[in-house]
Image (cartoon, rainbow, N blue to C red; front, side, top):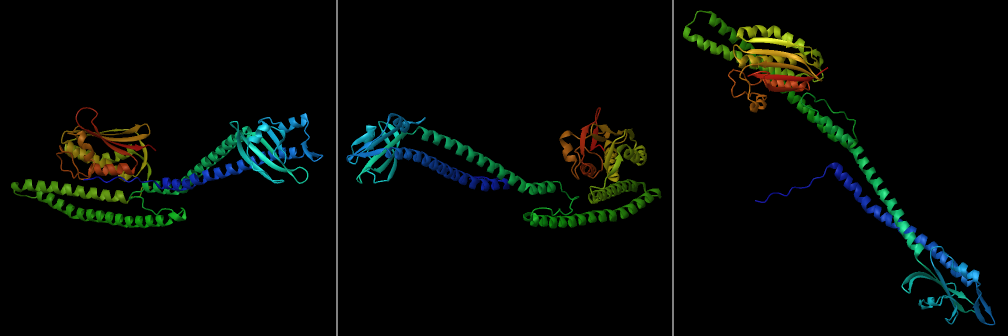
Length: 458
């Protein structure tokens, strides 16, 4: 069986950069070559014009006497014609019959076509292994005859000019390419910034934040924003229906369960067959468990329905003190030693949710630690975190099962109580709503479990 070849995918930013840079990669070299050719041809034209001026200067020295053509050149004039700070300059004058009148006779070995009067010809020729730029001119020299003037120079300044042009154009085009690439990257970054902001906004959304997205985006993103807002509206309706169902179901369950518990209590108080009492006790425990489950379902519905922004300044010490009023009597009744070590721990949050969290942790400890256990509630601060801990010396939860114990309807393998497996899951949800964390740790000393809530300090 052959495996599928993975396809290489590019991000939207990469695709935009590719399509922006592709024309640049084509246009910039073409523009650079065109610029180089224009500058090169213009410079060579100027140099050829200077070489042609030398030929014109030589043609102005042609003289005729008694039907004979000659060139009137003095020593200083010859030196002036040959003067060049970079190259060596040669010149040659041929009479109408092709005989040398004056100049460097070796240039005659360069076979060039004869020029008509005032006709120019420029070319690159090689003489004795040396490349020369040559200019040939036909000049009238008496009785309508035509003399040939040939001027040549070496290519030193032309080669130097070519190197300078290549350097200048290379730097100019390279700098332009870099600037265009940076401009393309910046334009892509700025253009996609609203999309990145939208992605970050969506990343922070959950079922408690389903308000419509703000339409302050480019026109191209408006259909996407509208689609997300419609999705949020559907999710909001579905979430509201689910919460209403949980709340109504839990509320409807509590009334008959309360009535059933009352009837069982009355049955236990009335004279009855001793053999029925164990059955009534089991019924009583099942009803208590069902009532607790209904209360937890109500807590879940209420926690999910409460907006995240409805937070108030609170102190975890005050919340623990309030919970103590209800749970100390229950602990005494269950034969549990419940103690409190409370220090100030200011936070911003929702008081009823934090109380629900602590009550769930206390219920778990009382239910699973067993009679005779010691339970300690602590509050305090550690750096930027406000802490609340519930520690017991019960059987605890093995480290490998603690992550699973935080899921809904999951219990540890050594749990002996009659819980539903919702207490820790609800506590974890409440901790996350307060931008905190819930950790299951070993007891401070000996056997047991320590559950720690960490919330950012106010």
